[in-house]
Amino acid sequence: MKIFVPSLGRVSTKNRDGSEKRFVSIFDHFLSNKKIDLFLLSVKRQIDVYKIQKFNLKNVNKILIKDITESESGSVSNVILIYIYRLLKSLFIKYPKKIDVIYSPSDLFVDVFPALFCKLKNKNAKLIICMFLLVELTTKNNYFNFRKFLFIFAQRFVFYFLKLDYFNAQIFVLNSIEAEKLKLLGFKKQNIKIIKMPIILNKKSYSKNENNALFIGRFHAQKGINDLIEITKKIVSQNNNFILYVIGGGHKPDINAFKKKILKSNLSKNIKYLGFLDGSDKAYYQKKCKFFFMPSYHESFGLTILEALNFNMKVIAYDLEIYHKLFKNFIHKVEIGNIESFSNMYFRLNDLRSFNHSIRLNNFLKNYDINTVSLNEYNQFKK
Image (cartoon, rainbow, N blue to C red; front, side, top):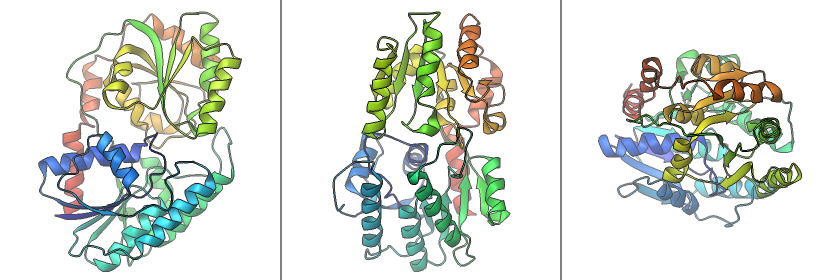
């Protein structure tokens, strides 16, 4: 099976997102266990990130575009410059022929349009677009800015082409809620497929000796990053030894602002910002911490929650509708934005015996086992 993948969305090498982690897990598994011929359209910085994630690219046909700048700035102007340049360059590359599947790991226009260009050269190929975050004008914390407006405009512009019968695009989503929203936006029901996030199941159970907490995520208003400081304040007022470890990357101004707020709140010994960590470095803290904090205001899934459950962590999160469908009673939910309820939940759970060793949870996690998820996805390719 010949598969073409455009992967051109990477600007910063200091963060990861769920769509990229999913793509690496699934396709690394494909390359190891399935007979596929992968053609990857990308840029050097993305290839470097794939190598850090130990993505085996030895037998991958790489089509590389040289960037106009090596800047990793997250400013709107820099991102637009890089994306437009990559898109223009993609017009002039030699697309492979006799492709069976065209797979875009994101719905970013810089990935989608090269996928459409390849489809024009391979009319019989199956076109798959991963749409893992439907951006809306408002969310419960009501943040809105020019960057978000551009993202919404670009996403809706892409949707116009994906709904055309000519392309017959299959849209992969992570939950039934966003599947329903796509139907309301005009996508055909038969073209929307709900898929799962994959994890490698832990074969051992981890005992937790520390009552500390962990947060993993991008520095973004959507992730509730500023709420972490207020939650920690509440906990420290009763437990001065509490430590919250924060793992994540993002735009430098956002990270610097977070660090300043920590200093201003006199929480330097209670909030430890670890920067971006992955692999065994990240796993060290997942094994060590008893709690996982997820004060996110909007999610399409929550891969870090799944990983936390896989490491026997007690998860406290804001009460998002999607969590009821995905994680049911395996996580502890509090009212969105309610700092006091969040900290109270921490204390209430602190003395309780861990619920994470149950057969129910183990059976739940098996649904997301990499072997099962990748097999189901491969079968989707063949349909």
